[in-house]
Image (cartoon, rainbow, N blue to C red; front, side, top):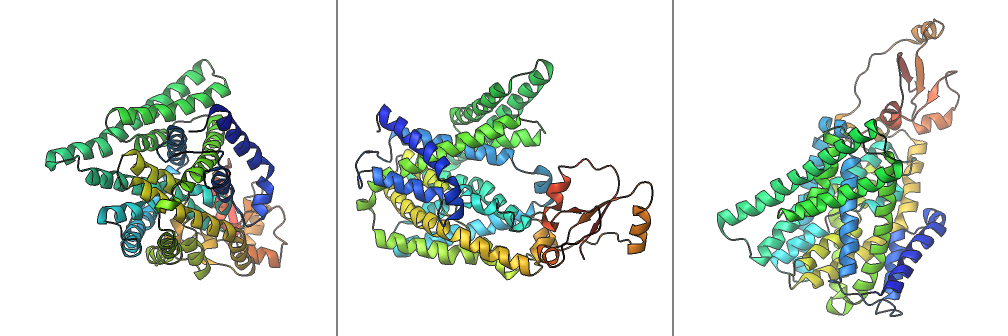
Length: 483
């Protein structure tokens, strides 16, 4: 376990280095996970020996738990409930069959390549089915990529862990053999899927309502509202664990309750929470890098790298391709989504749950996961910039089907018919006393060919119309044109 000075030095390095090199990382074929995993490895036992940390070390557990709890809570808070209600079939299609196919195929590959048992193989399949929003961050922030594709990746990365986490917890219970009979399994399922989430919903709903009420009546300083949000995350996790459920599911349920009850947490908390989660994740990458350096001797590296190659280059693209076979998207978009299913911090955190549970094979599974994650963050980090540039060039030179949609669900619906007016009628309305707002929603390639538009029109790419409209207070009529 690192001493106090070493811990402070690690935090200092994580904060200062990430700020100083942030712009260079954005432009280069690099990513922060690559940098900080490598840094942890360099400082660990296999490198300079400044950090000696075991997988069951308390400091690693604290940072990992804090990171995953914050990620799950913030993912839930940022969900667009109206979109999920209208387009529930998107996560069902991508996260249901897609995740199940990935889990099964990775489990089969692990059994064939590494020789793991059935439960160990399924655990690896579930752990490596998790996709990482941290590694995807630069991709989903790239406005050159159609919004519907970025939204599909965001939905998958944000909700994916809620699909695989219960599977991992059930497999851990099976391996431990501590739940016997129908009554035992019924109690376990009730605590895991009902009691824990209900406690989380209560904490999130009551907590956010209380803050909203008190802020409206007496006014609470923004910095204390930010700290209050952090307290809600920790309270939800502790409450879920206290009733025999899972704290991570409770944290996600607490964030979801804020959305379900239409409560508003201060934007200061969302900003502060993002910063806190970012700091915890960067530090976690350093600690995981140091911890993984101690596990290399216990893992067969070549079979683990073979598993990484199969999972990244074969299983993910095939599973995603099958899940999206009815989506109205271009071939380039299928390649793009199929490639970006990286394993990162979330997979390491889920593997650490197996270690926390005290399973004998926990450290071996964490070591295998670590090798796959290091391969993934290296490959996906190096290819994110060039592949995004390749896809954006396709968008610039031709109008793609996915450009006509603002949401992930729209990829499965196609283009809807809307009422139309003639050029003469639009001219008459523009010359009238209450002229409509005109939006130029031509595709990027059409706009690049002729930037000249209708005088007074507002330029909004077609895949960003829904996001733009959500930020406007529109009182009159709106006319869009695309050609």
